[in-house]
Image (cartoon, rainbow, N blue to C red):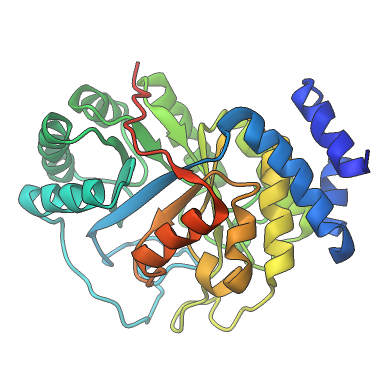
Length: 330
């Protein structure tokens, strides 16, 4: 048995990786990549079989954000040419849910730009979610920024199953990405939604000039947070943002990062998210031997792969779409 398969078996037997073992995954020679993915697939298959969860975003409010995140085209320091608009109405959000359901999506993600939602924004989301839950068997995830406890409670009461608030990078690297909020602000929001009884979703963006140790720290931070769903984004550098022109990644390294997330968070939903098309490129299918979830369609301000191409990719892999509501709210 090769070392990566052995490590996978150790993980399935309950052993946690050491920091050194985690770094070894990112440092693995490309010649060991298939063996590494085979180990990751052993873990993934144990918990999820050959099923893949599909997710779809609706960007309900675009731009107009006061934060200074260096990767984001919607931030206050971005000069990127993007569409800007205030909160969509309930009917538009419902229409998006219907479209998601027709595409065999299991999780519908309601996203809004900004530091955090106004009470009027919460009113709109609450009204929309109540009707979505009446009409469609969808898991609903909200991603609205930093929350107040009473706002989290209202979302829970309305039927929001999951709340996304990414840590994005490591605590050590955070100040190089944004200074308008802290790493702990993000962690505290995740803890708050957990307190409200909402399933926590938190992930990362890879390729923002972080070190390999930073990536390992991210993976262990998400384990400590108990994130049920972990989106792994790969930087799609946008003109007009401070990280424009950054191009540190190759498809093989991206696969090692996804494998790392699986070895450290074995039973969690690992989702290949933004930037997969431009960073994984022709190796996108291999990512699903470690991950068990992807986004369909477009992201916030960047385009995704054509939906039918994703459906065909899953068919070619012999994987099955996990088309069911994942009722995670207790």
